[in-house]
Image (cartoon, rainbow, N blue to C red; front, side, top):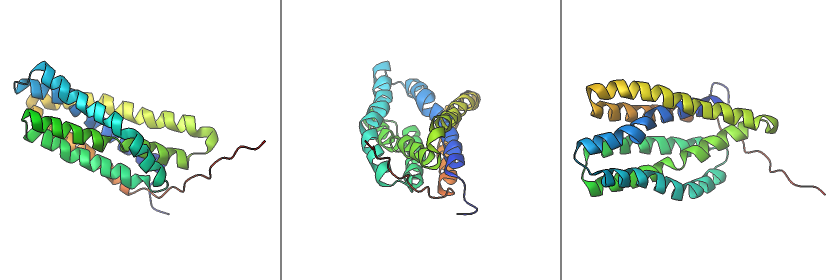
Length: 194
């Protein structure tokens, strides 16, 4: 559809913004919880729940991305919006049981993003260039992570809570390019011939 972003541009931009915002959760959430008096074990449990739940849900999220092929940008957008909301909840309501609940929901909300955006890239890329496209896509995440560390480090010097607000904004903003992207028709499955 004319006037819409390509899946490659949308996923690259969204992935960059998402990984920039992820810095606040991956690094500064632990620092923040420790500053509130959480033990290092509790901080580790909260951080581990995010990754553990993401790992457990990711195969299911991948199946969902396969079922939605051609429209996976909506699943990816839902993922980043849920993350944006949950970042604020993790910062605001900070009892240990609630942090565990938010971390689990954040992990589940994170799971659909990568399979969805990777399938967007794969569907729009000619087979002989999938590796290059995936490399460029992942470069977006690395650039976002690099810039996010610099930005959030500077912001956290003033107020660590401001880092979470900014991270939430990055997550919410990363939905925009996804929702502006065109549908990518799923590729025809390759069949083996003998």
